[in-house]
Amino acid sequence: MFGNPAYPTYQAFLALGIAALVAMALMPLWIRLLKFEGIGQQVRADGPERHLVKQGTPTMGGVVILVAVVVTTILMARFTTEIALVLGATLATGLLGLIDDATSVTHGRSLGLTPHAKMIGLTLICVTFCLLAVNLCGVEPQVRFPGGLAIDLGVLSTVVDLGGSEFSIPWLYVVFTWLLIAGLSNAVNLTDGLDGLAGGTSMIAMLIMAAFAFLTGDANLAIFSAACAGACLGFLWFNCYPASIFMGDTGSLALGAGFACMAIMTDTEVVSLIVGGLFIIEALSVMIQVVSFKATGKRVFLMAPIHHHFEKMGWAETKVVIRFWIVAAAFGALGLALSFQLG
Image (cartoon, rainbow, N blue to C red; front, top):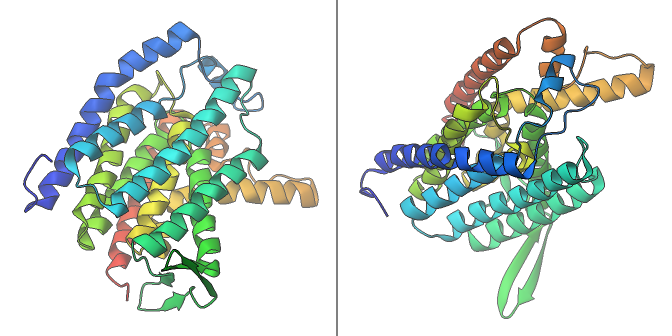
């Protein structure tokens, strides 16, 4: 481990810097390899016309993001059950995204795995993470709200005997964590539609989660979150407009899962929905658009997710991205403030 454990904030900032440098060092090599292999993004046919020029841009930049996170976490953090569980869930979701990206590239279309197949994979990851977090890490199956209110989701639990040890299955909390992890993974994935958008907003969200981990006294989880933020920072050097590479589902699904897992481990599930408010808005815009069109045949937005709506209104891509960064930062600051009101 580098750094002095007596100064956890120093370690977190150092992790951020190391992850950023690792990502910036490896990304050019990864881009060259992808170009050599002819692996590029398949742009959705019904998207904004200005996006057609992005056809063939290297994708799966999330691979380097995850490598940077893993390398930094191994160098900086102590190996604990908590860090192993969060890192494992993030990597498993990233692997699911990698399969999705590879399927998309192989078939030459903007869609990868079927929604059914992707949801099965996410469900397995979510349920496994929840049960291990509760039984190995002592995570309480409850949801805390600002102001002191707490709802016990462990009231409906089954306890089984595994080799003389009790293994608890809190059914309501399992459903809740599934909704949280799967929902945020897909929400970040939907946000990944403009150059620098998902990378910048994920960086902001993970910085706030690092603060939550620090406030709960877990320097290792703070290092992990800082490493995620740093990897996004290094990625943005190549993903800012005009992007040289996209993160793909490999990165967006993994970052969404990592964000949700951090919320569960720091007992900030509800507040995390505020921190990730922009992701929620992006997901809701798609849901509203689909429901409205099926029910009335009319669209609420010019195009969904909502960042495309503003593009259709004539906003430049960079304007949309920067303004969404500002909104994400505002949500993050609000969530951080409300976290001090948790019971």
